[in-house]
Length: 66
Image 1 (cartoon, rainbow, N blue to C red):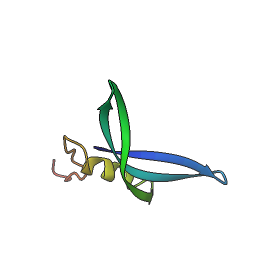
Image 2: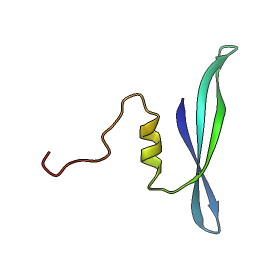
Image 3: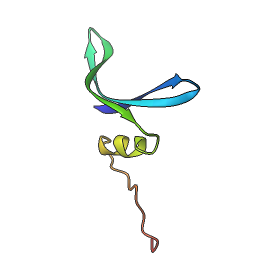
């Protein structure tokens, strides 16, 4: 499963919507099925949402001493 971000343009402004998506192989082809619509998100929230569902968890906050 992964987070899929859809970008829509309304009135010259970008709006982002997040969905939880699963890939499955059906009849030899990969199909994406939406498991949950997470709704509108801000541009700042996108990396945190993707990191929460990634296999390799990246560090998003760094200490100044490192």
